[in-house]
Length: 402
Image 1 (cartoon, helix red, strand yellow):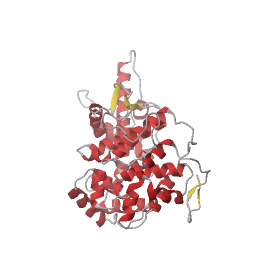
Image 2: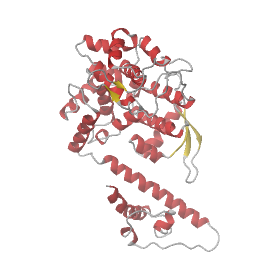
Image 3: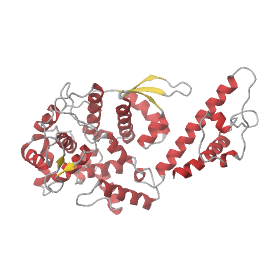
Image 4: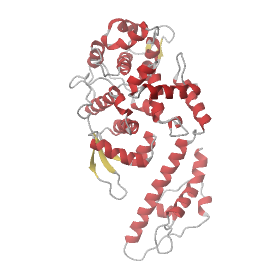
């Protein structure tokens, strides 16, 4: 959607309408002591932007609305951040393919997912504990899958989820069990053969509820999960020699308007010592500085820093490994099915030169593509040789994609 009056009074090019009841309630309610006031301000501005309101409307609301106390505090300390935060919300609202009208109710699935996403954002500081950074990414990734599938019950391919969350598949498997113990997800069906396990993304467990929401009328989502994931899954935040997940969350808080170590510590849950240490590293890579920064310039800074640390291809390497793992799994299952089949067994023999002559993978079962699964003397599966076969077969496709 087009943005009008960019230089004077920016707003979406759509008729102005009253705010939704959820956004109005956020405006009228003072945030609690543990609430992320920056996230609430973003949610309010996002709701105002979707309703066709303007920068002048945002400035007027900031003067007295209890929900925007964070912006008044910033102004009192010499930092007027209204224009930057409005631009951030407006740019995000402009990407929405559907903006609900004032009295048009959300579908139940959207209400549920908005409630989950808001709880994650308001209680973001609780993910500072060991393993919490991974849990946060996984839950946001599940939300994006659920929004597409239009259901909270999903067949989870760990490698696909790992790719979306920017994590290792083994981490996904381990943390899903932890999230099940804490009530965030429930396994509804176990994996069987080539079928992935089925998991249900639950509403916020006890203690994680969104206290600002009204029953039957949850507020709009805060910073959208897809945006958070785009940031958090950048190569720069990979483990050493990358900066790591904690630095990603601290940088995200900076982008959200937390400009002092104390405010960043409050928003992220890390100790002041940890925040200061990470900020020093971010500063050395020119990722901390005054002034407004566009999404394009931020992405450029992240990419430059990733190249400087030598981690600019981490995601691409992980993606290739996940593809190879999926192919190996499918090939072995195909081999097992062929071995169990009754009657005379026939199948193609693998041509050692075949992998180098194909430009792209062809359709068909894994056994048609790769031939018989290689074995060691004694009949045991030879996974090393199988992996080399798949890697060689996919190499031309990877080169074309690059």
